[in-house]
Image 1 (cartoon, one colour):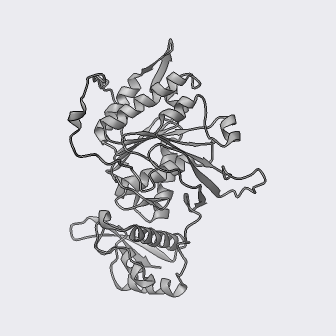
Image 2 (cartoon, rainbow, N blue to C red):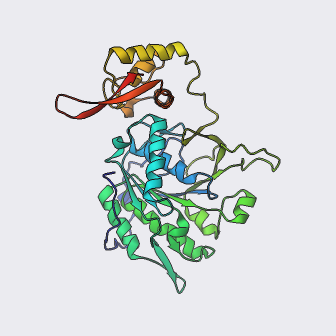
Length: 378
């Protein structure tokens, strides 16, 4: 992957937070509150948390958010991305190969080319390395040289989303120390403000946090300093102990939202290497074997690209045959929510047909000897 950066040295950003500013400097135009996503989970220039027990799938869910943000027109769990752009993902648990495997699975399931993200999705591969961003000395939290190098990485990538996985590897502080917790989140908030991005911090809940359903760990300072927090579980956090556990089921529960109303629990299901909404219509509802044969015939008769950015993307054929509006000819920013969902349905259908070897993808050289991929009927 071309956009993989090592953390590099950089002097800390220094500014005076106590320089007075009078209200007259605000002007008359009141700014609007911005969110990375249409579900209002991730406020821009702020820090949020995604907590979940080990093995529940929070890294996978965060990778899905990274792919949706870095892509031009994907959604995340049915929610539109309002600020598509570069993403920087610091992975302190999964190594490079595991990240690659998971990313490839997500992209295949979503029907996009992994390398369409070459210039927008970057990783800091830190598994097995000392990647502590802050330490606690004599009751005070101090940023490390690694934190300065993370800032330099942000300067290179200029991400709209920074994902840090997990917090336990990043902060060498007493997590029950309220002041230390607040200071650690303040360091991340500084990055969010300086680079106009959102920081998503992945955390593990304590045993008491799991038993209570809060998903918290350590001091309440972590929870209080974040502007929002969501909790991923295998059981419905609002359900009872008698609930039968489906091994593929997950539940995403909003636990805090400073700037929006707390939503309902979102049921998820593991499917084809990523999580999908369990409460939405199935992508193959209304799609018949006859539709597949019509698509195969079209792919035999014409050249239809695999790249969903191409004017002759094969998804347009599928959309016309199954009669759904995916906003053909419209830029991603101009699509309605229904059109975005319809595009996602078409991508899922195509990726499933490819996986089941009902259609295929071939590479061909164009007149300029550039390699391009096309759908074809097997």
